[in-house]
Image (cartoon, rainbow, N blue to C red):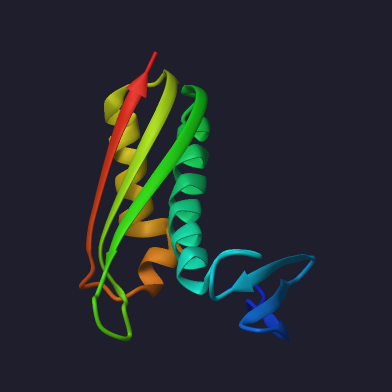
Length: 135
């Protein structure tokens, strides 16, 4: 059974800034990326966040000794409007006694099956992931 629908409400506050609300959370969306993330930055946060949550969830459910995880996303955008993402590189830094094969499997499961943000984006984006494990 599907969950409840995702909802978002944006209210224009000034200039090109909006107060964005979804459920109990809110943030400021700012076209200039000053008062809050720009819409494209928010999308980058969403993609990196979605996959990072999946990877942590998969590794911890696998009872791996995960000490820390961070993710860095770099995306290339089209030079002309609509300036969409053309390529995305997402690098994970994993700290702990975690086998590389487990990290690779977690990333692949997120990308191929679980990350709803990635599966919502256009699939012709060249998307690569890398990782490193620090013990």
